[in-house]
Length: 248
Image (tube, rainbow, N blue to C red; front, side):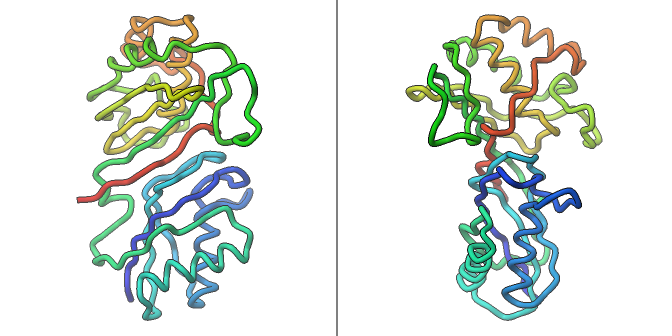
């Protein structure tokens, strides 16, 4: 039995999220079906994080145990062949043999997310479902300034989904940066772990700042309130990407 670490890319549209569910197709189930097609094994693919319906990934991490002997490159190519035949919007970018003590979720030391806002009058034609379209001009400098109060260790109850199952709302946000590249505003975040909807709630709140409806002080007050009702709206899943997972 060999454990393989997988680096996975997917378009979240059309999936109920990463986790296998009864109410629709999931990324996890698509990968498990590909493993079954490759080696005839009913294996569980464990992910580093549970992305929501509509959320994308360019660097999701996962692991799977396979009894069949195969080189890592063969595993990658075989899984991609079965994913392609099934018409899945999922690709295995890399596969690597790892020790039995590796766990995609529990061994991770950092997760990285990117939120993309298309900030122009015209709606997207090529990236529908892959960005949050905001037509009014946003002030990215004000958004960046406001984001600074969220960096560090805080009680993020204000930015936590009501159904979040994390044991504690206290998280350490290692970095949070807002930059503009032409018509696109990118909000990049790094942390050991995130709360459910934390990144989308941060993006929705910073959009209020960029629109001039909130100030940096309002964001600080919302954080201190530790009350979800005091935070900004939850940004749509379209613009959110899990871009990487780091390990020791």
